[in-house]
Amino acid sequence: MRDVEDENIWIEEKMNVVTSEEYGSSLQEVNLLMKKNKTMRAEIENHEPRIRSVCENGQKLIQSGHPDSDKFNHNIQDLLENLRHLKEMIDAR
Image (cartoon, rainbow, N blue to C red; front, side, top):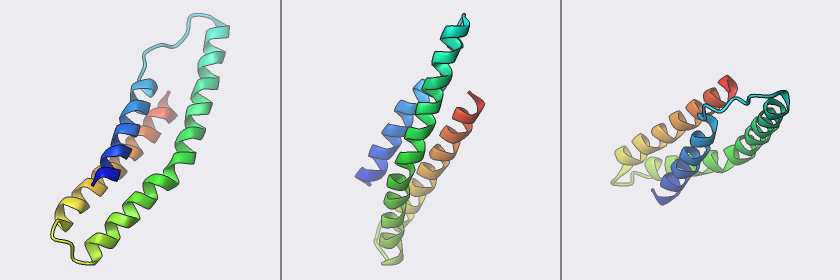
């Protein structure tokens, strides 16, 4: 559960950057923002295996019949949805 919370916090931090309404007012600023976007995209791609690992560990607990399986499943689905939304937002940016 703690790992899922940590990953959601990480996603939330990235989402704050990705949803910024700053678009740049000069070509130089726009180019800088595009480089930041590219770096952010790479960071998300590099971090995704960690999120997948957390989800796999949660699935193992669910499959072993853990008493909180329903809660684990809900939290895992939320985490994956948050990751999907973050990827959509970075693409839109």
